Length: 429
Image (cartoon, rainbow, N blue to C red; front, side, top):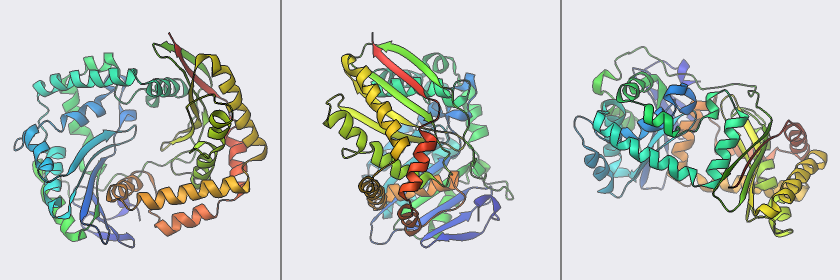
């Protein structure tokens, strides 16, 4: 059952060890009890990100993420940070294109404090004019830092062309012009209208008791009548079966870098596409590690680049697959030729059985090892609520990976890698 179909005030078991309660107001609380650990990880997932911004609000989600650490009526910025530092906790946030997450990882005994701090931040932040001006300079510095990173520059260039004319094309942090133009009134309005209970999921994993977490969350998120609408239901997950079109073609720019950096990609798949398990195996085997085909062909055999990898980026209604590589200018043409040759070879003949087994093993091992960390389990809870129809157990996911065949991967490669190309290139100035 989707959270949007669950009556406020009720609790459901999603899989063994995972429960969801919908509170009055539409705030959902999802927990996973992890035996044998002494920690707990909490994340508040807000279903709003950079793609939800208008052109004039570009960067508002990320700007707001910074500002929520600056203080509430009862806590200063120092109070917020020192609360977690004093117990050795980890505390941070990040903004993505489709959501924003505020997260902490603490000893199990300190979970009540972490819940209270996050509840205070999410429901009662002040967003003062002074903090807006101070943080504006920090964000402009962050944008400058990204502009000095070749990988960031080429991927932003790629996204800007591939999804031209849509909000997915704009950088998550915003542009220098958009950040300079944003004012306190705009950001505060964005906060009040977007950070609502139905748009939020509180995900917690670790040594916990579900009903205790629900009680703590209800108390911490009751400030400012946040849970007042007793009949409100959580927002449904973002789902789409068909990915939106992408713009093919080539775009080039120059920067003061020593290398040529390029991204070659094609339209991919949505987050909820059932072929995502085959895509994971394909991506791992093709360019996901030092034993992958791309790494072996480009670096080990020819010495054309230090770093080369394939990627699969998926959103609720969009996706891209492709290859990223950086090389000396004298080798860039040959690198691009080799990459295109390997893509064509995937279309023609797919993977070998050995490559399939290695890619599947990489996926299985990475998944199982990541879930030994409470933070990874917490992230999984939140992202499933935002983007999937239901949660699968670890065993169910492993079964789906085991069912991926050579034909599945070949068919997928033949579909994806024959699509029109988008090429982004950043050359030395």
